Image 1 (cartoon, protein in one colour):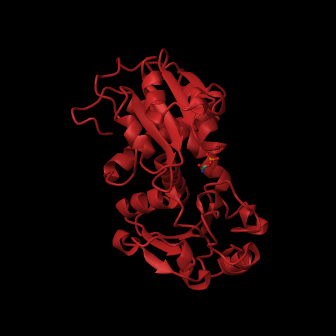
Image 2 (cartoon, helix red, strand yellow):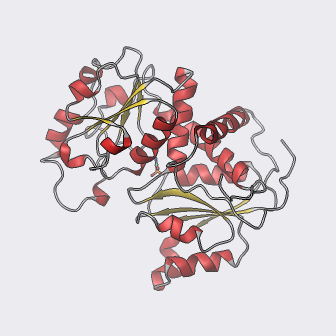
Image 3 (cartoon, helix red, strand yellow):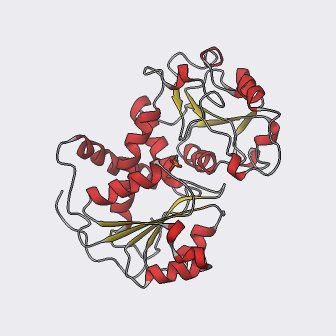
Length: 320
Ligand code: CP
C-alpha cells in the first residue's frame, strides 16, 4: 500500500468509546485490520500511507502493549511518531491537561493518542484540539482499541461473534477493558456474563444486558470465551477482596475451573497478567486454549486500522 490519504479535513475524527458505535463500524475496523495482519507478518512491514503525518502518544499512566503498539502502528504506516515523556514534561511544573493539549495542538499534530487515569479526561481534551484523538484508556470508563483487538481475536479464532457466550471474569468494577468489551460484544450479538465477587461489580451491569454470576463454577458453564481481568489495585481505595490468596482460590482461573467452560473455550487476558492472582500459569501458557499473545499481535494491526480510518477525510458528522 503506497497511496497517501488526502489532507486532513477541518473537522477531526476521534475514537473515544465503543458505546454507541454501530456494529457495521466495528466490523469496518476488523476488516481493515485484517489487511494489516497480513502486512505485519510480511518481511516488508512499512508503507508510506501516513507520510508527513505526526502522531503523539501522551500517556499519563504506565503501558507496555498499548503504547508500543501505537508507536509501531504509526511507524509502519510511515508517520512521524513521538512518545511524549510525561514524567519530564511541563505537566510536572503544574501545566494543566488542557494547556498541554493546546500546546501540542499548536504544533499541528494529526493524531493524539491519550491515556489518562480520569474517566472523561480524553473526551475533554478532544474538544480542545484540531487533530484526531484516540482514547488509549481513560480511568475505568473505556479502552476502545482493546475491545476492537479482543473482538478481532475472537472473530479470527471462532469465525463469528454472534451467539457466543463470553464470560468476563474478575475486577469488572475498575475495568475500562470490560466496559468497552461489553458494548462491543453486545453490539455484535454475543451473550455476555460478568463473573466476580459483588464488591468488584458495577451497579449498572443489568442495564447493559449482562448476566451476573458470583461463582466461577456457574459463570463459566458452557462459555466459549473466558476473558480474565487483573485486580486493578491502582484504582482501588480500600479493601475489595479479603486477600490475594482467597481471591485466587475463588476467582483465579485454573484448569479445574476451566472444565465448566466448553472444551474448545478460549482464554483471553488484556494484560498485564498477575499470575497466581487472577490466572494460573498452567492455563495462561496453554498454547491450545490461550490466545493472549494473539491479542498482542492483533493490537498492532487494529491500531494501524484506527490510524488509517481516523486520518481519512471526515464525513460531515465527524464521527468514525
Ligand atoms: N491491555 C493494556 O492496555 O495493556 P497496557 O497497560 O500494557 O497498555
